[in-house]
Length: 222
Image (tube, rainbow, N blue to C red; front, side, top):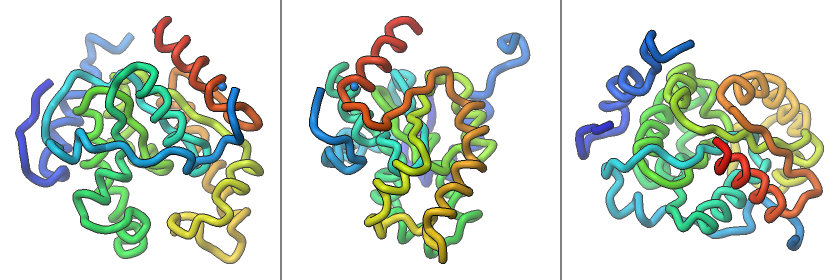
């Protein structure tokens, strides 16, 4: 697959969706405590050359905020000696501000439209890709994911709430009742995670190494 270099992600997403969508003929974890922010960001490769096109990602991770996508993704990338690309970080790099700030300024609908382009760009890179928790809300993103190996990093509502309780950088969780907001989002998104993923792994009360080992085993068999 190839795509033009440069340009805003929204300018290339429709071509990517058309190119990546299946054609009719083709259709027929032992360590310390597990926290979302355990590991530092690692997207230098994409930052240096954001429009460079690689083979398809080895695996794409989806799941709720606080599920552990970032931590697990970095550990998988390290184990496979591959780069890690986070679509939320690409948004921050492209828009010049924190992802939560972009969301707060644009609102849900406009943010999701913007996000599609950055997801398309992330999926045009090799390695391990971690998507924002709400990326699957977009039908275009779900279409883009149809040709990729997608793993659902799952977590109970109680644990996800605990892990994100002190995180003020996620305006999508803001509301009078933050816990209920999290549960509502989980109820809305779970069918979408199930739709796009071919493997599901829970991270509750499990060390990251064990979760990573399960995913690596799945990748080897896939």
